[in-house]
Image (cartoon, rainbow, N blue to C red; front, top):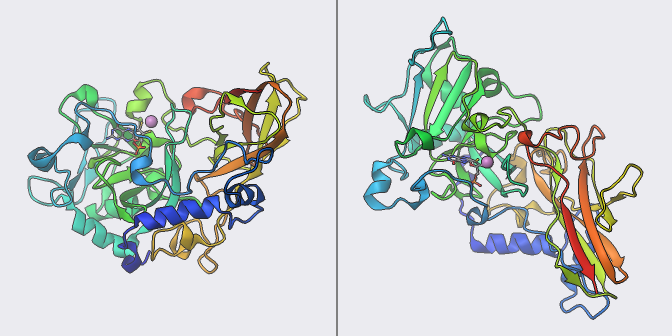
Length: 419
Ligand SMILES: Nc1nc2c(c(=O)[nH]1)N[C@H]1C(S)=C(S)[C@@H](COP(=O)(O)O)O[C@H]1N2
Ligand SMILES: [Mo]
């Protein structure tokens, strides 16, 4: 990443421009439905654009849906409490140590050449982390999705340093098989929210995939306290529970087991984000004689996305052979400058072609875009709409992972009446 352009702030205008660009077309892959919706200021009766308007590709930081444990929640702290919590840019520190807790069934104990600790003043601070970002920084777009919530939380441009580069500051590691980490919390162990990764996942990234990383910027600005700043972990391939907010402690351990808070709550701790389509709310009643456009979001998860399909029925369960119809996928914007913060070139983002600045895949890996479908004019009556994603292996949602404890991707159903 080039550091000079990393420090430019996102203005309100950028976001307005971003949403406008999405609403006003400039889309590849045929955005005619949306063009029509946006260009028609006051649609005459009988040709209205329908209820669906796609949200902006980048979610403003404060518009992410929040999933935070703790009482009080760290982002409500103020003044001296915030300083005591080391959650200001000046007071933030990250400790990286080796696990010394007794683990009777693990024979060899992890060691770290040069731990970074608070007592001797070696803990990592924000200037040192951002300095590392000048040479090792990465940035990419990624959707945040909670394993347990059937709506994506938001999509951001995240910037930071791969976790492996930060660990390299600690010299040689021996007998390390897992990395445990957590953020600020009150001292009630019940409220600790922690997560973990294997040594392999941290150190090596398959080509085309995105690294586990320590983030300090979101949408071109410092990460707000609300979004887990000054510094949070972002694990691109994982559900939100691995992306620990208010990051302060990393412990390398020879314990090979996941200790994630989510694992203890009956979730698959190694769940990768699922490919999944979501249906935006539809008004309960819609007028007959007007064209109806529906749509929603779609996340490209572990198995990528081939297409989105919808099914319009009367609400009875769908059966094999039912007519599923391909929906329109919102393509990448033609001009990324209308989407990205000022001064950030798409050529500098992981997942984009460095020469052309175009995304290598669409939707982006672990990214999110919108889909829509024009249902035309419907006869008066009751309707039920479902949508599903079909992944690059040909599996239709919720397959191949129907177990919702590895990520909620049950088919959403929206009922409405045309009157
Ligand atoms: N410290 C801490 N980090 C956390 C959590 C938490 O409760 N405490 N919740 C996690 C969960 S379950 C999710 S889904 C994401 C949500 O990120 P967001 O609030 O920025 O949308 O944060 C994760 N990081
Ligand atoms: Mo979550």
